[in-house]
Image (tube, rainbow, N blue to C red; front, side, top):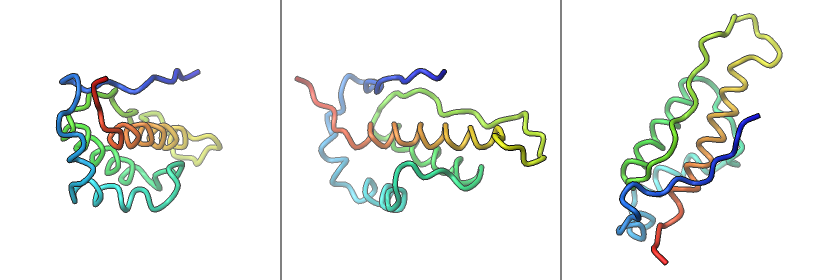
Length: 112
């Protein structure tokens, strides 16, 4: 059973420029294509999963947010198209990780 972790806190305590991130063109460009469809969408293949992870890692770094590592690609696939293939589980895990990260990068961090 996988545990659900809460959101990570920013490395620096909070991001002083959080409000400016939402207004930057880069922010909206990055998420425009990723959010046209529901967030429960799964990557179609390993390459797309890698691209989603890479794009979101860039945004995490840009906003100085520390978050757990994304799921690792499976190494035990037999290639026979099994029902419940390890790749299916991986794509679901990637989609969940991406959904959590998207929620983090959209939330401006503020001190109380």
